[in-house]
Amino acid sequence: MNDFFSSVTQPIPFEGPESENPLAFRWYDADRLVAGKPMRDHLRFAVCYWHSFAWDGFDIFGQGTLDRPWIGSGGDAMDAAKMKMAAAFEFFEKLGTPFYCFHDVDIAPPGDTLAETARNLDEMATLALSYQESTGVELLWGTANLFSEKKYMAGAATNPDPEVFAHAAGQICHALETTHRLGGHNYVMWGGREGYETLLNTDYQQEREQLGRMLALVVEHKHKIGFDGPILLEPKPFEPTKHQYDFDVAACDAFLQRYDLVDDVKLNIEVNHATLSGHDFDHEIAAAFASNLFGSIDANAGDDRLGWDVDRFPVSVEQMSLGMYQILRNGGFTTGGLNFDSKLRRQSIDREDLFYGHIGGMDVMARSLLIAAELLADGVVEDVLKSRYQSWTNPLGQGILGGSETLESLRLHASENDYVAPASGQQEHLENVVRRYIEQVR
Ligand code: XLS
Ligand code: NI
Ligand code: NI
Image 1: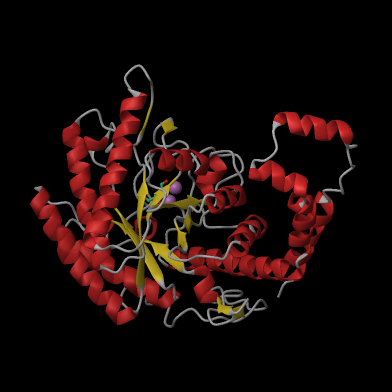
Image 2: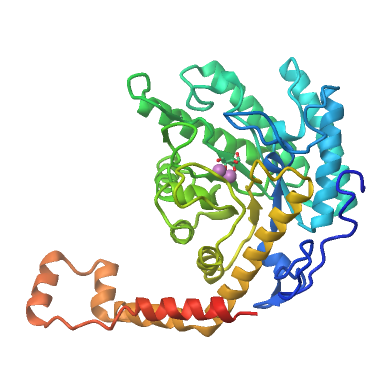
């Protein structure tokens, strides 16, 4: 297994913060114990198949640029898919990531008929299973691509035509069963083209009903085949459509409650999508935990000035430390992990650039984990939080929350009791503490 990345001769080692070796980790030390658990188990890194192996650098203005001999060789599509899989698993093994993720079409080419497409996927899944067994790499999640083909231009579940809904349902059915067969820990549904451009040709309420129905069918099938992992919705506010239905965590929360799906569905939060929706990454995480909907993370970065999904590798230790802090203080990942839904820039054309992108992203996340863990152990943030809300444990607070107070009883209470000045919110102090940990953590 040394065919495609032969310039990287060994698994990427951990060498520590002083290392100048570009092919070594400076912070990701898989076995290092952090808050009683190895880093590997906190972070649960996954490489995504689509950006790293199924994309050759094309964009809307031009053709592929990247050195990817397994794409577009013009030969047999199944041979190309096998070559791609060999390259992918060689990469996972050398990088040392314990998980990967894919869309059905990333690993297997579509055939001329649905039956042939299904056969291709089955054959590639058999091969993936043997690679998983020989390398120990596991499937974090699988998903179906319901946005690339022409038939999905007006949506999959939210298409005006039930025939298209049926095609999408069939594709999900097979992708979910394949994910189950490969021992996948979760099944993801990003609402690709589930959204609209104009209400002049879109029946919003009808489409929402269809989306609720599709998700209910997926949950039903998950139980039928005994798939234990959660279904994960992936919120995104826009792109490709102007109005994506799964806008953000709050919109998904309302949707899941409306269709009574909160027990089986959780969320896959993507950093760049949070940015696009006008939220901070840590806000989306906190919102998900507050409703018991936290599932997994697509780790990447947006751009301060570009309003689209640029999917850079994570770069900001501060942003990620605040995110990891929310994850840690709420108990960490269970079935989820950190999937690099990140892609190289189009001019990073060498195969080795895939290593640099992932090593940098893994180091940013590892360092952020260390900072978050020490900040949590320090307790200063938690202490301020606790004391700020302390008086809600008093009879008045308990009466309000427990329902024994009314607007009238509160008016009476307020007229008999003077307003008490609160303690400082200490935002600047807390930000200084975070900065101190960012500077000092080793
Ligand atoms: C697109 C999404 C996509 C999902 C998987 O913006 O991030 O890559 O993660 O379908
Ligand atoms: Ni994503
Ligand atoms: Ni995205």
